[in-house]
Amino acid sequence: GIGMGMTAPVSITAFPAEGGSLQQKVKVSLRIPSQFQANPPCPSDESIKIEERQGMTVYSTQFGGYAKEVDYVNYAAKLKSALGSEAAYRKDFYFCNGYDPPMKPYGRRNEVWFMKE
Image (cartoon, rainbow, N blue to C red; front, side, top):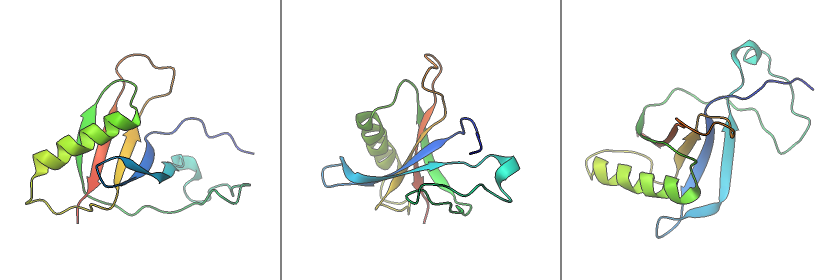
């Protein structure tokens, strides 16, 4: 019952399938605004969970435009290639992040994050 407005980033946990496409299971995460962090409102939908994300170090790449699944897959492949075989990161999932409201036409920011092991 409390309006919290748009938060950024909207983070989607992507689980890559063989061939680089994404599996159908995804996890969408929204940041709870600072004023609600200490005592977040309880979700009325049981499929919504509140979880605390611990600090992490990520390898990241940024791109613009209206991001589609294919864009995230392509930029994840580019990031993987740039990191080579020396970097240790989680390969079973990665984060697809969008920072802008849907109606922002220009200067959009999207990122792919690989979590460092």
